[in-house]
Length: 512
Image 1 (cartoon, rainbow, N blue to C red):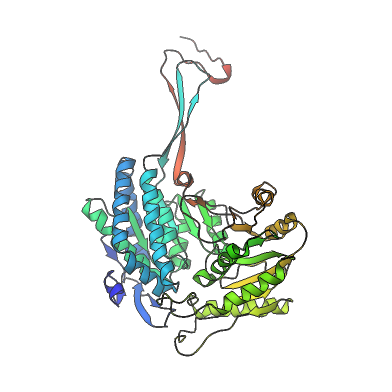
Image 2 (image 1 turned 30 degrees about the horizontal axis):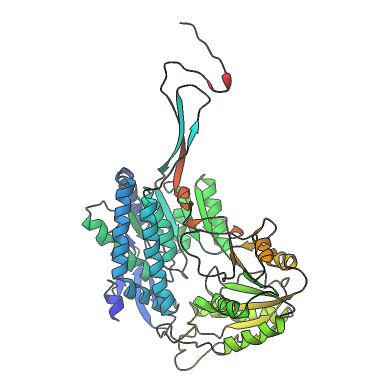
């Protein structure tokens, strides 16, 4: 396919890179990449060997010493050029993302647009790495804070956003003066290879050292484990499941490193009696079935007030009946495949479990077969009438499974149901009542890192800090002041006088 070869993807690819230079093949182990769209092999990638890994990290260490001294606005200029290169390759790279991961073509292009947007944001941020000034209690003293880069930022990303989450971290970290070491998901390494090749040309053009942006592809149990235990990497950003994220945090914590965790979401939309159904229903459906339910911000629970529950249930089933399921490369389709047959099994098992626990399937939950569905990765999105206390409802099921839950009484009761899960990423309320909206946003409201009013749980803009609480991990990436996570804070005091007064009025005198 032209979009694959045009991005420099070969039949067999090296899996370790420091920029223009690629390494691999020493171990002989390969990752075979098959598309969930049609089940066909796309290409294979050599896994990073121990020797490859050491070479890449050593090069990154060298690059940091030079990159950190380049003025931040100059670093921003490099990111600006990367954004321009991504614009040139948006269609091809977005199509590769769609074919390799399975998300609809519009979402693949949207993911590249997200990379472009964070590049633009980072360019501005490069001139706004602000510190604070404080007034000293001592005469002729000046106090202020400043921020410095920390070194190598290790970025471990998940399959569902093969490149965007990397860019949230890498573009911001780079303007801060850090260098970045990326381990993408083994399910979607080709999108990472294509991205690495795009940015390498920018670094070459500007005569910059190898190692500013590096790539290592391999299993989490090997390459990933090396990264989280490597004392040369002061910051680890991990996106993935709670069990793996907990392990990564423990390993990083043991060596007193810093973790940025983006883990699971069990996101709810509350539809109050004052909700505008015409506004809410499209947001619910996109939130639940977008990326085939494989977003951390996917809408997994819909809490509906009893007064509008029958109308919502009927409208929701009707909307699901109109969904077109098929190849994500066909823009007419709404829902593409799950990423693998293993993911399909997890989805089907979850539907069976919720039925055993008392839930009733209103629509969907089937595995599709036949022409166009040969990969075995296509399913019909499911709506299940459930109760929040069911064990399966308490879990994050990474698929298009929407739990429809009725509530009665006041909004505070619905908020309590929403918050009664271990995850705390994204949340939303649909209401035309100002008091209800403010209650949802109050300290007694949503306990999630993201709280929306009259928009869905999915599709956050890069300008805000992205992340959540509880088992979501507490990390923040992308916008706002998330840049501070990639830097070390330094408090500075300058004495420009001829005397040495001590703080707190302490006196200390020594003989002449």
